[in-house]
Image (cartoon, rainbow, N blue to C red):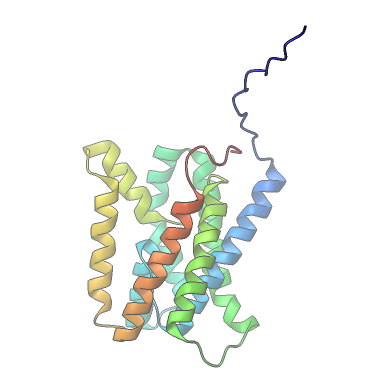
Length: 210
């Protein structure tokens, strides 16, 4: 009598992305992030990281968010090249450039007369969170400050998470001078939604294509 034996499970194999997949993913990710940024901008909200700094400068000076965001990221590309390699740096540069352009283009393509801050926080935070996941999974990023914190962690032993939290806290404190209390509450909600989307969907072992 033959007994059936189950074959041993094979370890999952990572499948590299091809050039077309990377191009489409970067376009998709930057479209989602830039739409979330445009909604935040129209509702007077802000977020953390380099985008948060760009919002602060934009609200304080009236300069274009896209131009400020692109400029603030420039000093971080050398660190990205040194730590992540030229492919990651090139993809990140293209992604930042696209978000800078598209975030200024969206308001010319869609007109929304009135936005509820809490609604924008949930929708915009979700859009940006999903957009970040798409970019992360194709070895791209939008976070100049995040690259800096990772570099300082490698070079000097500082905890990247604590550094990022400290910088974001400074952005929140500075925002008290520029936004309304309701915008502050909605912005914090948006940050929670954004990071929750990333935390639940971008975890080691759940996605193997590179």
